[in-house]
Length: 205
Image 1: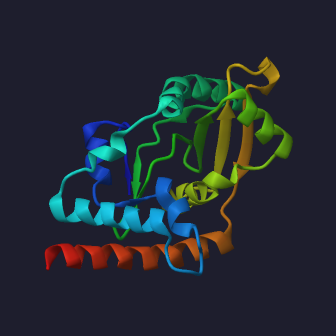
Image 2 (image 1 turned 90 degrees about the vertical axis):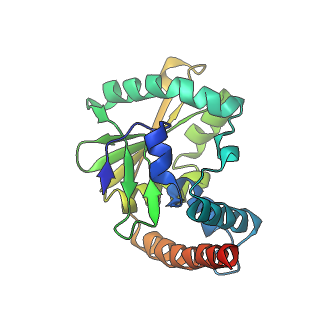
């Protein structure tokens, strides 16, 4: 289900409350095939606390300089992407899974079939991405989450750095659903949700 809500508004935070979100899928998929690592265990506890208390973990509101930079530059990157691809980017909103356990917020939707994920970075990071090509591995599970929960056919990974030469400021890589990755993601998410439920039971006991 798609909810046309602006990100970082109170309504958006309420929709996320108690849901396992795609921005944390990398933590969940780490140590795949083994027990969940400390970041995933901590995240399971956080989600369980939200389920039980109905209150948002305020520590998740922390923003460092890089995050502030990303928020400030995202509208510019989005506009440049529209010019580059001759398209219009609409609000990414919030996608809720059919079971209502999982949620996802792409940075924008492109028509019915596409979406985008924007990362605003420093020159060193941009140059590495351009030379290496492909999508930064740190975001591969988040992007597959966009495709799965948003039911999209493709997602453009957009890397933006205003300090770079004009022809290197915007770097775009298109990603399509990977059946194997999505299968593995679904299996791991099922196990993770059980971890959350175990924490909920402990909190209620």
